[in-house]
Length: 468
Image 1 (spheres, one colour):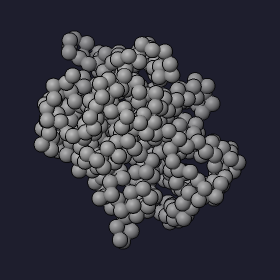
Image 2 (tube, rainbow, N blue to C red):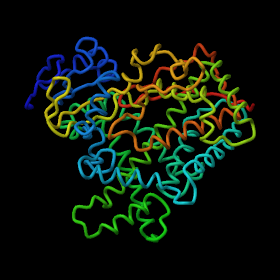
Image 3 (cartoon, rainbow, N blue to C red):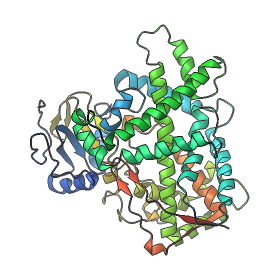
Image 4 (tube, rainbow, N blue to C red):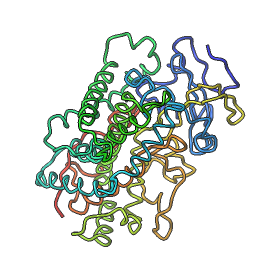
């Protein structure tokens, strides 16, 4: 089986099925939280033949990802999309490949705009395009899903592809549907089963293969964009992330150990495009729901916007400093939306001592971000929507160490700064112009996720935007 160190405790696995009886594929996170009650915050579980160590709560996750950051810096297996990536691309890479791609991606995103337009200006411009579209709904009910994903995706598109898409662009809409569906597919019970039995299931027909084909189509689109960039590349004036990568490939042409190749280019671009679209737009979509469910909160955000920004000026990221209540509301939305509840799997890169246990090199680790975001030691009402979690007694914003929607440690989300700016600018821009109105009474709004697996997928709903 595996060479066992002294592993953390856990339920006894059965041959081949592991702990399938204790871990339900349709409610994996909930099953883990039940096992935590029995075995404590660090336990071992067998997902089929695959052995995983699960970390629950702020302390355990911080000790691993921050205090022992290096040991826990490997990327664990995400079998459902491994066939598409094979360890290439920044999100799923390991070792030297991961280090090179991460350093490059961070620097490039940071310098982006290269003197032309900052990320903030791109978001502000895009938010204005969104307002135009939203005004066309004329206060009639509509489903916000693709409105939000189009606008958010355009921000990352302008960085990686050098231009935004027109909202009516058919190809763009098709891409966003693929991203949206992939995220849903990765969160179904099928995907959880696939993660347990990929050794067999990759050869079987069935729904679990859908995500593979969706992602292959996305890869084809990006490869096509790369070819277009190659044909018109000017080494002295890069237009976007793809150009920067191509220039780096040229620089390292003679280095046999270079990780700057077409495969890593396509897959890193896909990582950025996918992550930069789905997560922020799902959070906004969920956020609208919370604001309609709690009209008093929405009203206080409206008041703060009117006081600090007024009705005519475009919101800017520096306004956040003067808007503690709105900032707290956005944090609380992110905390409860809990977009990736189980975190993305990590792996230990060498034999590791942890809390008196020995985790053999290559052991996959699930840092349950959702268990940190609802850690009762850090949040007085872990399951309730309460912006007060992020405010002190004087109404000033207060940080909370257990706020980890972007994970933490060496594999913390690359796009954190950009995502936080987007959430603030989109929420304030939309609420400056509109009130969100639900089609059902606030108390009847269901805020439980439509699917909870790898991701928490917001429920589908309609709302009306009433001009203020």
